[in-house]
Image (cartoon, rainbow, N blue to C red; front, side, top):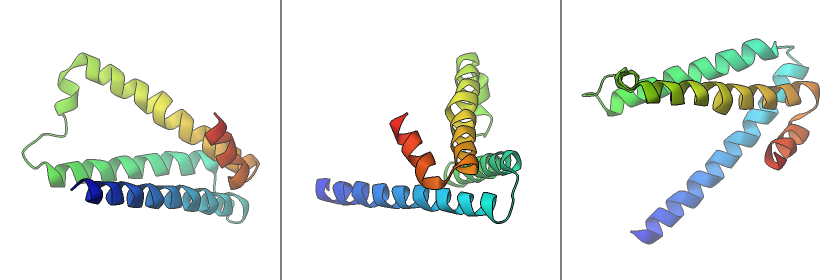
Length: 113
């Protein structure tokens, strides 16, 4: 089972890195050639991702409520902090660097940070 988990982990790392690179390249194309507004794009991207994750959670955990996280005040604070600093600002700064530069430089800056 250990060998299976290792292969699964390597495969998921490769897929994740590929999607990261593809997402940056597609974003660069959308900003430069299709003139998509960066603010709208970041907002739509995060909202759609959130809805998809909530749907996935509900499909895999039918017996749990989606609002279970809001029962604990500490969880709400952690969720808000992660939402603002862990997701929004990271995504916004990455997309802004793609918008004003290109995907290669944005990815390099992201990894250096």
